[in-house]
Length: 416
Image (tube, rainbow, N blue to C red; front, side):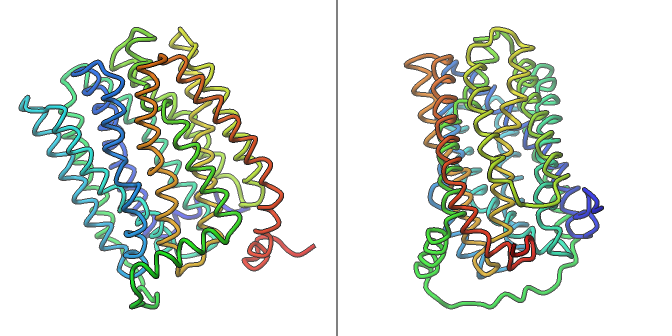
């Protein structure tokens, strides 16, 4: 029986896993601290959505260009540079907040800068995973372990941040986050990598972009998965954007309550990641994605109506599981079937579907909540996600037919 931690046998991946785990704790602390800082300064649902929009807007346009770049140049060096820039952004937030010079324009500007960094970092990290593992068969396990790492820290980071914000303020969360980037930068510098043997191309950027887009459009499984991921990214936005309002106004709590809700989301997402780590095959993930998103939709509808913290935490666990299942399972399927010479470009479009849809959803969530209320916005979000899950279910037969030859080619399944 294969080990659920088999990808950690690869030294380079192990270094990245440890460094990223430390850094992600700080990132989750910053995410909570930023949301609470904006809510404390403004008491505005719209500005919560606007700040979220600023942090995600670059992912609408930059990833395809980054994808072309990643298919031409050394992803390892690019990843080091973007981690250094992300560290600088967090330390700037810390300096401004601790000296009482922080304002909403500063927050929006630095959120936009972080969004530019993330628009390059996410596809770089996704495309770089395959170089960190010694055995290509461990790729799906590495992706699932990445998710486990992400969500284990999602459980720890917000809980720590809630205590830190309540005790000494948001600025120290930003400071801890900035220093935590040293761990992942150290891990990247300590790697011993084989030479990158990908063939170099001198084709025009637009030609390569078109080639990557055509490849996605012509692939029924990838095209359908990306459409579904982008739609849920927009429709599920109230779930994350309006959580501070849920904690502060609906449940009558503070930063600690927000930390508990986000930690509950982390519990569900971590349970999802562990479940995927224990899977030994990519076969059957499509059907489970439909169930997971359907469960998220139902949980989101109920969450907006919950007046009790314990019930809200339980529902956040359920919704966290469902939403994360779609993200990780989609990543696993796409990374498994994509051609290596197009991996950077395809994962850049994955980034648009995943993170680029967020800005639209964030603005929509803030505007809707201001007009129809938080409870109604959650209900509308959950209901439309449920309808999209039914649509995806109907696409599964065509996706199975299209992906079967690729699975046979890779030895994942055998011809009947």
